[in-house]
Image (cartoon, rainbow, N blue to C red; front, side, top):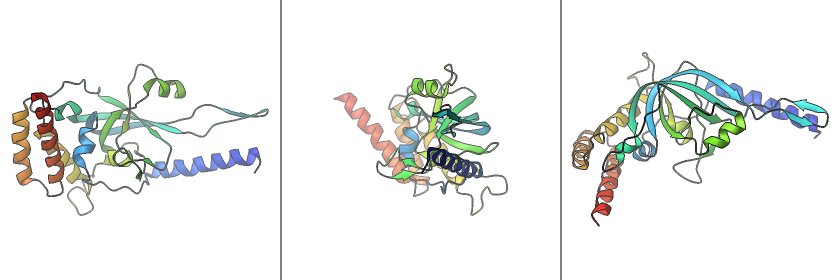
Length: 244
């Protein structure tokens, strides 16, 4: 294939991927899978609405004397938070203070259809895809290399950029008024479970955290009980290590 043909192929693939991105076709359904791990390993869990989306590329590509526009390889989403449900520090035996994100969060998402799971190495998951104007529950963590990201895409160095933990499972679209509570509403049970888990670990004292978690376990959805047990074990282990 000629270099021109290769560039055309790249451009065509970019257009097709962009169409899927706009449509929000990730093949992902919200679930309660390993909820404790997803929540406790996120810097913050928030709800809010997408304000703006922008595609990012690394710059022009020059082949011989011709200069081609590079297809976008990254998307940046401006997200207005409405509620901070959880902080990672809440899951520590002695709650650690952490500065929450401002009212606006900047989420970056690579233009890949899938990437390796943050939870299960070797398993591939779709990357997060958010729609403009839609509301989401986001499991956020700081992009691990802020400086390289900023330099590569010429981003504002005064801002902090986040990813959704474990790709699409970390960006759950909230149900609309018509769908909420119906059989097709898979998001609300996840939001409810996350909120309950986070409220249980919010006290600053470990004894209070454990007491609330045990109370929650007695009334929780059976699918969430493993996550509650995991939170209890982690707190006990941390306390045991401190006493040694």
